[in-house]
Length: 346
Image 1: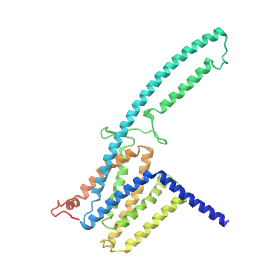
Image 2: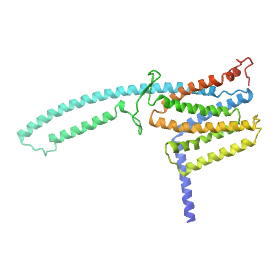
Image 3: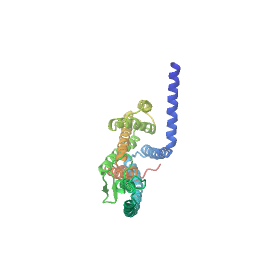
Image 4: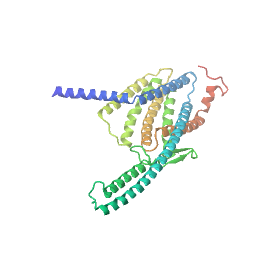
């Protein structure tokens, strides 16, 4: 029994690893894009820490505003291109349906004439309706075929197109009708606000704690997302997922304890500042997990990925610029030497 249990456990672990590798290879584009985003965030975080240590300046909203602006422009161009492509496809579909309807009417007229001729032949030649080429059978087949074609045409109409598993949603004009979105604007504002605050706290944490701790703490977004999906989406997880979440939590706890005990790491002298930075980084990671869940709901139930990218970029830029004006004007002026002192030179 012990050997069989051991073999079963080994097979389970092996199959899990193989399935993970297959899934990773199948989604290599997503993996590559995620790594690219991680590199960009790492560069932004390193730059933020260097400015905090060397220039005593921290401007997280400035980084957010710049990043969201780039994302918003890219997403807006891509969304407008998709809208035009869909509009052209709708016009082509409408033209094809018009041609199909004309052909169907011609076929009905032709079949009607054939039916009349066949009826006359039946009367004259005393043919029965049991013949395979009888009008009743051909008429029934023609009506069924036309009914199926009409149903298929209606189901595939441009106005009724929805993605698989997605409910048909209303469309809302945005920016004075320049764009058409599938969800209410305040849905996107909510997720953009949560994400902007998450990155704000993470970048702000570089002022008080270490670069390593901040990026290790970002792993907390994984168990946080699992928790929120369980609470909001009622999703269940396998034991392998729970083990992965436990590993993330263990690493964060160990990293937090070691960081608190070291009161002189990378120029951060006060342990109270370390604790403050640790809390900011952890809270930002939790907000990232919540943002991931809410974004998944909106993307799957309402607008697509492109729409989400554009709306997050648009509202994220507005939110970050507002925070920049409210909280970081003095820091930005000090960075560029507009506050009466020389600019910071690295």
